[in-house]
Image 1 (cartoon, helix red, strand yellow):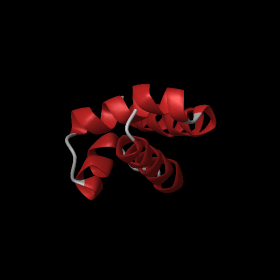
Image 2 (image 1 turned 135 degrees about the vertical axis):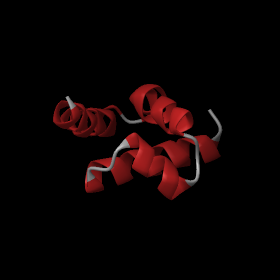
Image 3 (image 1 turned 120 degrees about the vertical axis):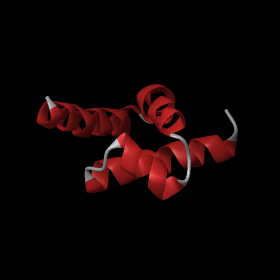
Length: 68
């Protein structure tokens, strides 16, 4: 994976973990599509940083529960 992509994925993951932001909010901040951010944090991050992936997963689960 390209270093630029790895850096982007980590930054998005850290942003979500630190702020509790949704995928949509993160996409606006980083100027990427929602689908790109979603793939980054739900697929690519798993292979890059498993610990950060688990933290992001918890934040996104909380977000889904509050909507339902």
